[in-house]
Length: 402
Picture 1 (tube, rainbow, N blue to C red):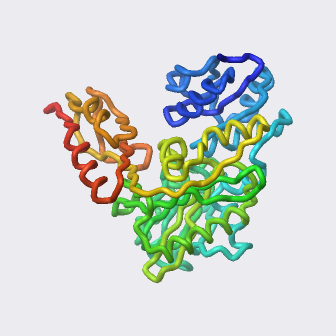
Picture 2 (picture 1 turned 45 degrees about the vertical axis):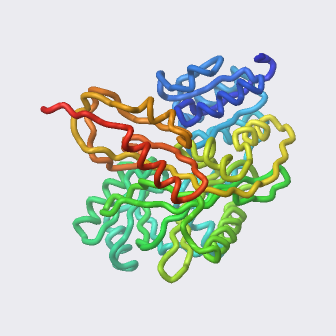
């Protein structure tokens, strides 16, 4: 039963935060959820709601002061995590720590901080003008990857091989950079790796799951599949996990969840791409990491936010989990068949489409524009491949002829 004295504020109420909101309610908390979207799915499960952009820190703090929570939590969103830490500090509540939030909110600050600890990273140059970017490409050499320093979901990220491509990439990154600052980096060819972890209440970081990723070719790389555990050697796995713990220490992350991305090149070197002081998006921290580790990451976040004790033991995982993104043919969708049937297939943990009948599908230009995803679990890689084929074949998209 909900207790109005146990007031918990959760910043972020999209479908990614629904598991966190549901658990808080199950634990008896009276929940205020926030989102800039008036139709946010999480509002269906919270006791109160507030329409606010998490980047509007002044407004977020004002809402928090009026609500007077005993804790403020967030997950799977960089902006929401930063707002939760900032507002918690302003209200004198428990939080993950401001240093980690600062360093992981800006790719340039992250790069500079990790450079001090001699973490292997791509060569990088901060660029405030296109002339800076031109000079950076000459210093680094083609190809380069151009990014906004403070966005998410692969918005504004492009690979450039020529000066003309660099010009497009620079201004696309600039348009998607809240600080209007761009970073140009060496493009590293190799296997993309994700490591998810958490920091226990004693301040010790634990690596909980490691995965390898498939990425689309071309100048706008987008993740289309994530495989757990990673399809790499045990030696490489141990090397990356040790590197990840060094990164977490370098970025002064003292509490909460961690989500890091690396590239393992053909010489076996591990390059840091980026790290976040929050759980992986697309329900990675809500569903996949607990499956892989036995750690209830949502409960950890809630307990941390209200200053309550939470202990755990990491359990070894045997089997396979994949996070597969849908990229269907382009066109006007007339009907969607088989979705509900696919959801009932054993081993299917979650399926979500980001479109409805009547919507027009286009080729994704960022992670946010993928057409949907599914999370599958099986005892082995062979079984999960069969499960994937069965599930994808159950879904049929019928297009309308223009």
